[in-house]
Amino acid sequence: MGVGGKVALTAVGLVLAVTAVVAVRTATFKAPAAVDPASVKLAAARPLDVNKVAGHLAEAVRFQTISHQDKAEDQPAEWDKLHAWLQATYPQAHKVMTREVVAEHTLVYTWPGSNPALPPIVLMAHQDVVPVTPGSEGQWTHPPFDGVVADGAIWGRGSIDDKGSLVTLFEALETVAASGFKPVRTVIIVSGHDEEVRGVGARAAAALLKSRDIKAQFVLDEGMAVVADHPVTGKPAAIIGTAEKGYGTMKVVAPAVGGHSSAPPADGGGVVTLAKAVQAIDEHQAPMKFQGPGADMLKAIAPHASPVVKIFAANTWLFAPLLVKVTAKTPAGAAMLHTTIAPTMLKGSPKENVLPQDATAWINYRIAPGDSSAKVMARAKDAVGKLPVELSWTKTDEPSPISSTSSDAWKTLAGLAADESKAPVVPGLVTAGTDSRYLGGVASDVYRFQPLVLKVDETKIIHGTDEHISLDNVGRMVRFYQRLVETAASR
Image (cartoon, rainbow, N blue to C red; front, side, top):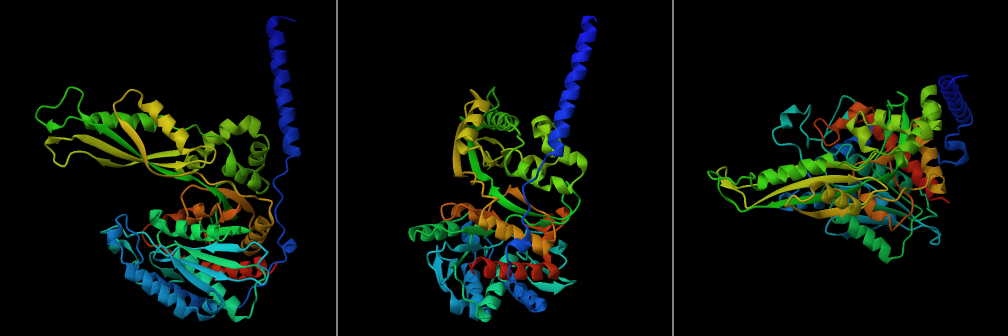
């Protein structure tokens, strides 16, 4: 046999060996064990009047608790009105809970359990909403702050993010309190007032709980939901966020001499230098890796997907590069795999015919688990090289730790999510930010999940035009929170 024949034979042998390994690993692949709702002993659902709940949510939408980038534009009286409304609307819940206000408008409620030795549970929902883009009001089916109930839904800014959670959580607490339920485990509610601007409310609440040496069993906040048409399966999947990305805004300054625009310097001045720096940073992306909660989600959902997906999930040692390539075809998919870079703001001269004395850009980062602000800064400095620019952080939050998918807390949440949605429950990575990032010192297990069902395309209404929530979702959320409190706080 010649050399060519031997090479061919070796190649065939390698292909057969790899094929055999892939086949064996696929045949023996086991996804993370799904939680059987029957094993969790979930509390039963209580009757509810969904139309009454819808009316209450519509009322809450009318309070314009808008968090602006410039705090001077906020209307503090709107938060005061919302607080008074909560107390008037949910009297039974307020009878059993103590109420504290920190950082001006953040609310901390405590419903003491009969066994203070048990770690409490912490449930979160924020009060503030984002502004409506000026000039877009006419594009809404119903005015964004009218709180209209129509066509089987509640319409208005905050109906999903996050007054939908706040109101349905209090509806559940009111029902449970009125029933005479007595928690064994303490229940704590944290409702931040400035989540949309990454403000001080949740930090103050976390500091309060830490000062009392509270170590909770788990924290639950917004972040993920039941996706009706999961991209991998095309079917429903309940995604519980087990981690969220960090947040950082980098300031890039290009100092310059300034002067009259009629005599620009040979190098183009500060604006040109800044443009080169921003482009260099943007082109120096963090590598994409198939790891962490994003990879865990695929492995967990593989048994419910096509055979090809199962083969890929069982053999990431071989198919990881292909999985990265396929996942990264969409911006949302790419965001699951690495730290993202988004130049968002620019500042130059105050006048069109004046050369700026400095040009500035702000770049927003969402930092993936396993990465850090220090590594991001190092990459940026490496990217700009010898360009005469100054780099600094204006704000940073590191990525959260990854919460357990085997703890009792996970079993309770996943069991309830599975029972309510009748869909597989999988972990996921929150690529945006929530107030729960500040509660990492209060609980090791911090989860991010809203018990509502949305199609992928429907998520664009969050922070967008025509935000609304269906009556079905409202009922589903009240039922979930009611059952969660009665299940988790009874043992």
